[in-house]
Length: 267
Ligand code: ADP
Image 1 (cartoon, protein in one colour):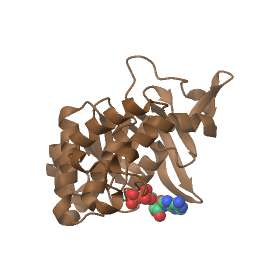
Image 2 (spheres, helix red, strand yellow; image 1 turned 120 degrees about the horizontal axis):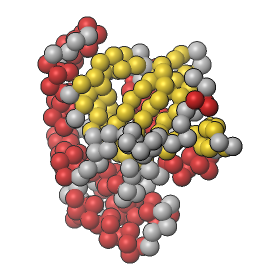
Image 3 (spheres, helix red, strand yellow; image 1 turned 60 degrees about the horizontal axis):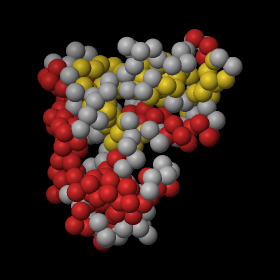
Image 4 (cartoon, helix red, strand yellow; image 1 turned 180 degrees about the horizontal axis):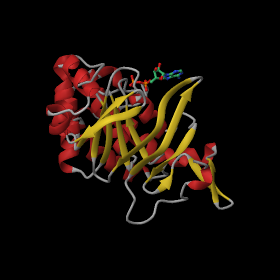
């Protein structure tokens, strides 16, 4: 497919919140995503599982626009994320366009990357004030509401070094939400945590799923957690979706042999 074959915008009535359309990503000669098509509907929670190296994290990194795209187009809320219009057709987006597009994507990683010299509250306020141009009072009110939601309001004046891993991760979730993203990405958010604090982070994500109509894409090795909270599971194999479906179906009656092998190995 040529770039001129892709729509400048997705038509009304066919606008998932996220659409990967024929997306290819290569590192040198290694094809990591191979003409990937993936939709995430508004309000849907989709979890990507699969063997190490199958391209799960790359899917999230593409949405964060941290990687150049080698083929295809990604749309968010119907508009191209990776491309911009020029003379009536799509061309790869420039840095300025990408910077703006990026603010529609919220992300939480394995390593929380909070600003160490700022308190929990300042961490949450920084993006809304600096990037969105929100007033300090509005940003403070919004950040306090979110810190309350993740159970961290009592620690709002603490610096990250005074917080446990689980607490830092909860602040990182509040900080991402403070930007009012259209899509939230979670990449192995519990894998760097001590086992006893994993529950406090998964419970926050559970609560987001239950109470907020957020569109979320998650990568995790925690199959039980993925099964509990996802609307759909995508099993990745060599940069493609090998099999996908509702959690009960995928975990209980996987159709493909590779899915069956993977699931029996991780159980
Ligand atoms: P997963 O998250 O499923 O473990 P990744 O998306 O991280 O897989 O990686 C997919 C493949 O791409 C792996 O083979 C990995 O080694 C390769 N890869 C990832 N990032 C880079 C990079 N920056 N340069 C070269 N190869 C990379």
